[in-house]
Length: 417
View 1: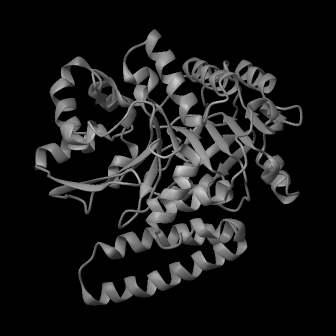
View 2: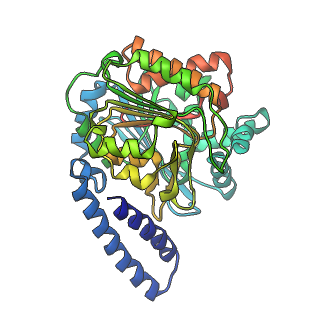
View 3: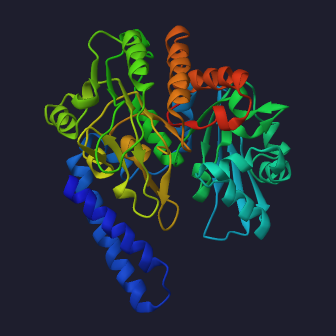
């Protein structure tokens, strides 16, 4: 599977280059490449049969998806907000609202200036994030707000609802939790989660089954915690990680496994996978450094002791975890392929079998990340909340200490709320 996923990554890069060309010969090459790509995807689906639906989700059935979401969140307890950003320079942004009863679309013209402001707001670099959330950028935030969450849509949203956001194009890295809502923020009032598409959300919801939510104290967790790093890259130490892992270990079930520093190696995780043990964990928590490669998603990696966990390695796993938490920088980012498909570390975990990911949209500090996860897991345990509900609690708690979204808005949920 690892070799196949590496080949898929190379073909994706070539496909993106060819798709940008206009000649008949190159389009013929693109068609041939598309057939090769689909053949590799089919092979991957066979090798990872339990989760094949996420490689090629079934045709969307709105009635079925609505019934599944009603069962999970209660009728009226959820809504979906979807965006369509078509092409490199769209002139129209299509926004869709659906709550099981109502389906409505709002197309909005995009000027070149508004489009550029949105693109800059989606940049992951910390300098762009700081500027976007600064007082000097109030006018920019207002323009972006009107494009993404105008009053016509905002008035439909109810506090306490679960809101699935289906972004498109660069919007996948936009901090939707920081959008304004009724003199507050969207991420303080609603329980948010992102999903790459409605068909994939349908597949994830069907995968979740009918069983009751598992309490954190009964959860079988795999905790990988790396505080120290060696090697030529000289990565910064993460002194807060050790205590973070200890506190989480006290909250989860007794059958959990904690891999610290030298024990958290690629070989150890590969051995767990080969033995079929990875799919026995309900929760995976990885606290370390990560690297997102914007040009080539397959080179994105989670740093382990003595090596890296590459995106193709994750694609070869079989998981059944309810939640994977990636306590590292830039782990929610994905590479947008030709068209509107994305691939990144978070998406790889979903394809491998995880039901939801908690990951970061921009670089996060060691101590602040540890504090965030302390609050998040405490809420998850004490209130028997869903991951999306615990995330809302954590955002509010951190905002009471530091009101800027830069401090509380980095982490986002992807997958089932």
